[in-house]
Image 1 (cartoon, rainbow, N blue to C red):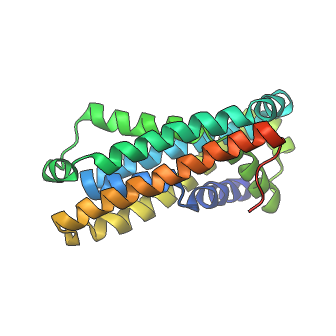
Image 2 (image 1 turned 90 degrees about the vertical axis):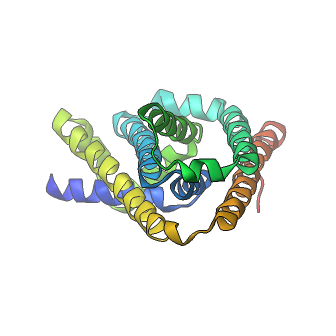
Length: 218
């Protein structure tokens, strides 16, 4: 069981490493609002990854059909939300946020909820996690047979994902003080553009899938 726990931690850690729109968003929030905002945002993403891991462990028979049938909708809806967040970040005033580093409980809850829901709009995460489970030879069928085994795997995935966000946010926060106001303004502009582009790509993939039935080949 200890070996499965360690493997699950690796799955959670590796599954979160890719710096997509969620990673850019967490970095931007850390620079603008401080370490707590970045960590809470990362925890939201880690929680969503754990939900996907639970679906992977408990079985994908019905879930996979649902995801396959509505995959394009997830791409378009998630991409639209991500693009809107990118626009909001691009045109927001980071100076006010930076001068007010203390973030209230409701704002932190908002940061958590936003990354949690955004991560859930990318159903491909579940297949990526399944691939990592297979790569590390973590037996999901055996884990499914007992509640304790399921709990071990899910806690491992959650802690592994949180570990990645802790490392990333701590590094970003370490150099946060070196950012001058103009640099912070530029970070917002660049982060907003990157997040917007990633959202548009997701929308494009969803439309392409509706028209041609498969994602575009890059």
